[in-house]
Image (cartoon, rainbow, N blue to C red; front, side, top):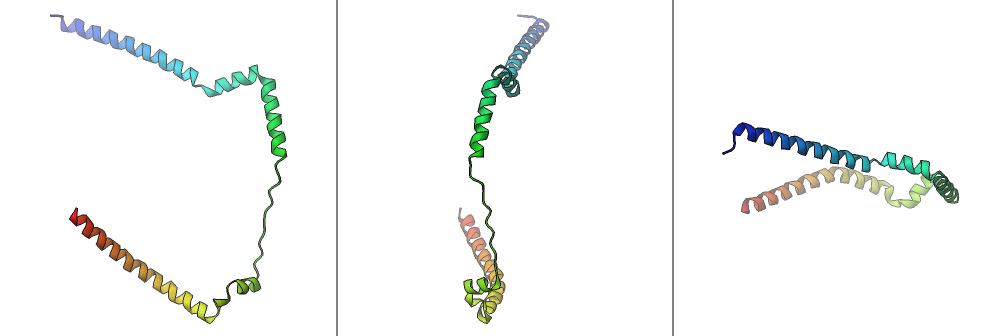
Length: 123
């Protein structure tokens, strides 16, 4: 049978060779995926093409229509015309709803939680 010390040395040497090969391969992958270097090389070797492309792109952008900003002016008259029930009845409904909404939400939340607990207990 082989000596354990020689076996350890063989495994260590093989590990070192594998690590070196992996390091070389990762360096090649890193160089191939270096987009900045590829772009820089392309700009240097094909400068007229890049300049032409930039000029065409700029010309196309200049032909786009200007964005118009819409400004809406709300006056009290237009608010009343839009919402005629804002009078006394509307104010009362707003007050009742502002109190009733949290109560309804709490009630429904409690019911849904109780349903979920029952369904969870069955499973």
